[in-house]
Image 1: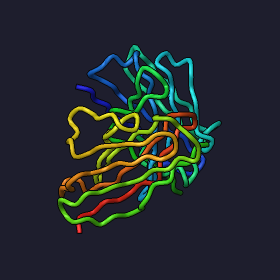
Image 2: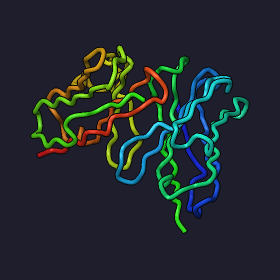
Image 3: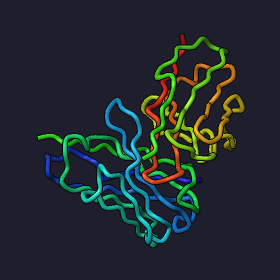
Length: 120
Length: 107
């Protein structure tokens, strides 16, 4: 069965960096678009970024453009999010989610999320 | 950016009552609209894809409809396990966006 495991979150000071990971299993990872979505405490869902199956196409939300970098390693069935220049408003649970074979497909499986807390 | 506006923000419902949540897009998105359920302290779960297509394993009391700018999610005969936040999501254009969410509780 499809399984996504998010990791890498933690407490970081403003201006700091973290690398989030998402380990995928139970499906052919290299066939699927992958997406990162975040949720600030007590708030709704915010789409952050997606990456195509080969990694050749990437999009970011304006709120993270220039500070966040999405990447993937299909040989390791893993998705990554490098987050730099962290701000208090980046505090959130970060979820990876599986897309389809096309960029416009729904997000059909989600990881359990990893909490990033930005505080001095 | 396409803005999705859900209504209502919060709904308190008695068991077995019918629930309808609407989602309006700021511009036409065809059927590129999906619905998710997020129970407390859990990850979101896909309920309905492409406006009205059912998902395997999701109870048949959940259904979706709409096209263009106006969409709705209906829960026929609410059960206690349906207490959750519900979100619409558009994949018509990037950046993809979510509605602000609708919280459903049992009265």
